[in-house]
Amino acid sequence: MQFYVVSAVVPEVTQDEGYTQFIKYMEDGAKMDKFEGFELVARLHMPESGELCIICKAADAKALFKHFMFWRSAFGVEFNYRPALTCAEMVEMQKAHNASLEEQG
Image (cartoon, rainbow, N blue to C red; front, top):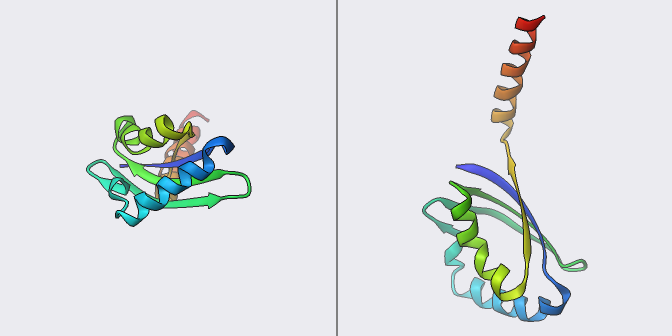
């Protein structure tokens, strides 16, 4: 599965309502935080600005949408998904890149 770093902002007009629903979600076991094709790694809140930073793993865009869709449609939260690499993946990619540069030159 691919790692993603997801940033979001909870609109000020829906923050109290959204976080009240979030309390219920967490107390009910946060069932959508892990399902086939999706795993939440960390969810970090910056309440002074309404921002969120989420680190997750997802098999594809459909899994991302499945997890985040409720919050978007109910509270207008906009999510920015960015694929990310582990250290091992970055090393592997850079080694391949360095090898291709050596072959060219």
